[in-house]
Image 1 (cartoon, one colour):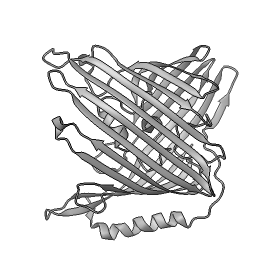
Image 2: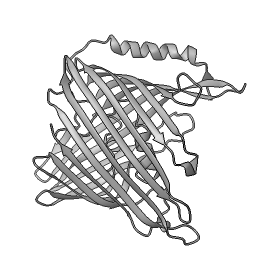
Image 3: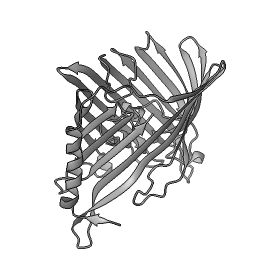
Image 4: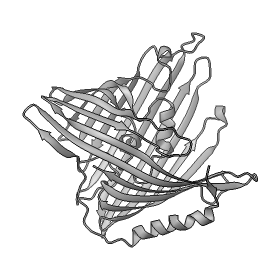
Length: 368
């Protein structure tokens, strides 16, 4: 394991972040996959995402103090395919994440594999492996985030089973020209062994899009339109068993989130907030309530350069020690072609660690 003092490694990090600020500002076209085949009853579009990264994080040193670990890695490598077969839509994505990441053993696996049928009117049904309809943070691709990675506002629900991807099915639709969207379905809980799940997890969401309805689940837009969206969602799974046969376990979540992205002065102002409440109970144990919320802001200058701040807070139940954890991310983004070609950097500041800085990341991204 490679460890170094932060003072030495902070220089290339700071230099790279500074380079983002002095790069030329040019218009940024929108992202898109590559259409390779279009027939009367079949279409195929291909995409690729690559995210090389450098991370710095504190680790315990051999002298009992704190050293800084540097890690070069490919955080994500994704191959994607989308299209339609007659009237059905489909999506497929395979990933190899964490290549050369310290402590990881990457293998290829399916990230998404779904098919969606139109039923009637504004009603579709989707089935397979994909993102459950919960949390703006989770539904926004990690390639479209304001800072380098998702924050604790999505990690806390994930521990209750609302993982990035799960197998199941749900009904979905839009009304009012896309200004209202709804989704509700049943999913496996990937955090609980299947033999202990008597019933699937119910997940539902309602979105109200008061402004533009294009690319709603995206941090930062580059057009001259205005976005204003509010979403509410929740989940429930009961009758969870354990090895003794007790079946009074449950998980339940509720959440609300919102996003505003509007022209402001010479640039664009982006605001986002989210709050989630998570209740879990293992069979024979007491209920545990955890609350988490976040707020983020970014200002896009000339369609290219964007300083950003994200604040995250987790409030633990007294049954698991209680306490409040505050985490702040300070970052900058440089967009060469919207989210398709960009460089991001951020530093992490966490409360109660005794460190002035708790980590840093620089990441380049190619995504189409």
